[in-house]
Image 1 (cartoon, one colour):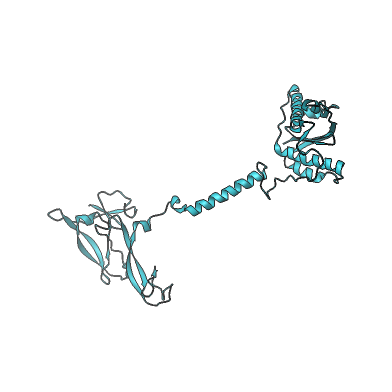
Image 2 (cartoon, rainbow, N blue to C red):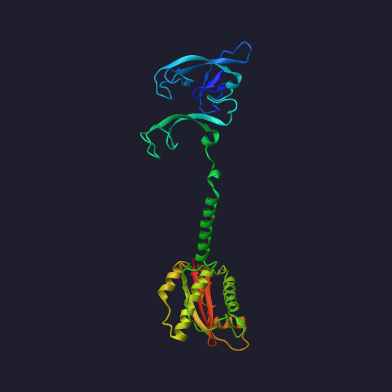
Length: 330
């Protein structure tokens, strides 16, 4: 070997850093005298005159005992040692990285990185200097996957699940106890409990109403209105308060709360509310026509191109349909 690492002394075939042992980025030419039979050679080491520790470079003080005197010596090495790391045997090659000095308590065996006055564990004052071998596993840098323990992965999954449920509950996709999407419920509202009136589904009447509005907008070359769930919920809150106030002396509509809810969905807009009677034989189309009577479709606001969403609610009580509609610009 003609080259060796300046830092750890490992021999290399060529001057091609970094060192594959310690990663140091500079090599020096090795002084190796091959034996006549090609079975080994010698190299220069600097030996501490106090403790005998060998160093690959003349770099006082001694890395073990801090003695300032290092003596140059020629050391005979075998072919096996030429490919080993400093301080390891053939059996240890690939399993031991290097050694380090620790101070071991003679009482409890606690290891200390430096010589302290007393043991950090039991207070014993007798600490013995010991050379400890460090394995590859102890010096390897853990990967991110090594840090992801099953407990950590379980905790992370639980946090993500709770966050997802909270978000879905807040936007109203699912019902979650103690999580509200901000639209209050109105209790004890008079009227139909199954969302039908005289066999007609109120949802079908609402659909017919919106379809007629959008047909009118299409005839004026204006884009159709979309119908977000949240605006429907706000319309339902306002409509049920009005029904309760009229039929059960519920105290009126909380206009301030309605305005607060609308401010989250609407930049500008307007609303209408009206009633229509239900008679035997009415279907969804007929009831929608009743609610659109008196020139609703002729109102220029219906075809205002600035409007882009609509929310509405129809409630049935005492043979009447109660309608609340919000038209909004987002």
